[in-house]
Length: 222
Image 1: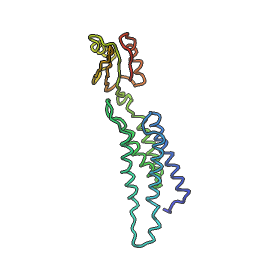
Image 2: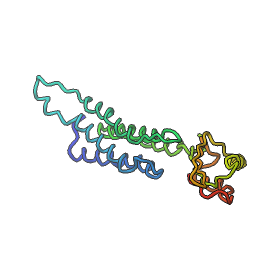
Image 3: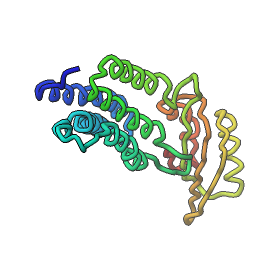
Image 4: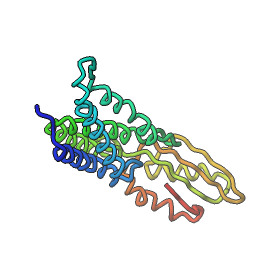
């Protein structure tokens, strides 16, 4: 295969940026830490490094004593993306989040490398597959069970307040995995950790509406 011209290399870079942007747009719409710009730049940069790895040292082949391994830079790209993926993973009270976004960044590197290597059909299939999986099998999906949540309830600190709250939650079909509370003067702040919801998180307000109408409940956040 003949070496690509400068115009062809620029076209590959533009295509890789487009593909990375498509993957990142899905993450952006879900308000993830790494979104459109991050995925676009990652795909663009990995394509550029792949071009350098594959074609950037061809002039050195004029020397008989020089041997080249065009895969060395490409292999380094896969390793280097680890630090960026680690920056999207967070440990919170409801568990570890960001693993799917980190995996998507890693896969986006592969998309950019494939475009840089001229493997267009593979890169198109990869983009469709990545976006399809992330969109269809996200955490808040009926097939997989709805997303976990942490609910903060501020209420009057009265005798039996926690038992009353548990009874109300049972009527709403909400069973906390863990409960923590803290007293602040005459108020009680209760943190409820729910492993799985019975509804999408967007509908949680409707589920909690009867609890919000209780006069001893001051505020609810999630």
